[in-house]
Length: 101
Image 1 (tube, one colour):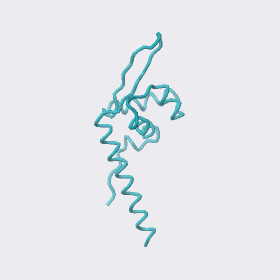
Image 2 (tube, rainbow, N blue to C red):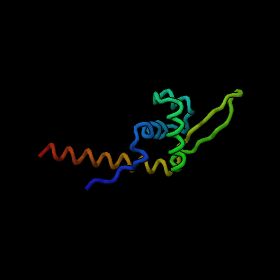
Image 3 (tube, rainbow, N blue to C red):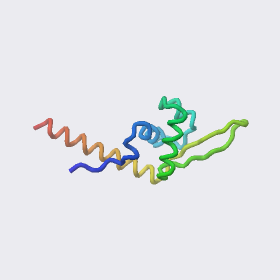
C-alpha cells in the first residue's frame, strides 16, 4: 500500500540540500551551509553521499584564491526527489482518508 521512501533522501540534511537545489540552477557550499545550519563537516559528508548516488554534481574551483564548491542537481536527482515527494503525498493521503472515516 505504501511506496518505499528513498533512504538516501529520508535524511533530514540530505532532503534539505535537495530541496534547496531543486529550485535553483546551482548553489555554492556556503549558501547551503547558511540555509541548512549544518556544520561544514556534516554538510560535506552529505554532499558526498548525494554525489556518489549521482543525485548532484559537485564542481570545485577557486574564486580570488579561495576554494569554491558549487552543487547542481542532476536529472537523476530531480527524478528521485519527485518520486520521494510523490511517495510522501501518498502517505499523507492515506492518513487523511483514515481521519475522514
